[in-house]
Length: 262
Ligand SMILES: [Zn+2]
Ligand SMILES: [Zn+2]
Image 1: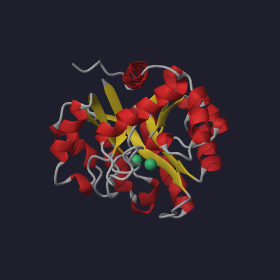
Image 2: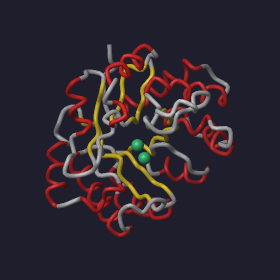
Image 3: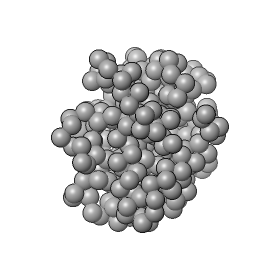
Image 4: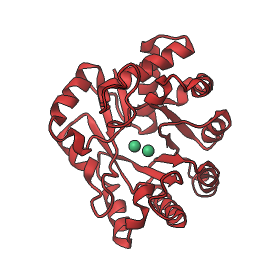
């Protein structure tokens, strides 16, 4: 079995055939998925919780994506804290900073990020980090507000360099690789991926984005393709696919204190 540790299963591109997509995932050995609940932003914070309630093997996160930071209100935070008590909510995420798109003002992004780390800390939940062209600020805020929590989390769709990987590990994070790892141009990232300790590795799709090679022509990524990223990880580390599947599954279950699914 293998776990897709990050997908946007609520995305409207899955509205027509979501059950087929889930069926293909199961057939590919994806026995657990973490649906990211950021959706279209507040006030709807339950995009992933709804799906997790429908399917045993789907778990959820809740959170405000940095893109939507400007939509957060005091009610948003109350509701997030409330939703953290839901038995299938594993983490706060994806939260962080995105200075590439700047869809929300940077100071608002930072405030909303800090506030959500507080909620996660109070709820005793790990966090899922999205960071783009904002590493220095992301690392500084994590250092200040998260490192000491001891709750860890996931650096999602990791695309940083070796030094950023080292810092992430030191802050207690797991490092999750997406389809980017399979892209022709990602040689440096593959180098970095070989240096991440086996017990801190995860794989994800970030579906419907970032379809891995050799399926890049298919516009919409979906959870079954997580096996391609795992295959690439196995190839560059010189180990078997089964070893990658086993390690990443074990890491995910341990991080979230979950029993192995049947
Ligand atoms: Zn992201
Ligand atoms: Zn995402």
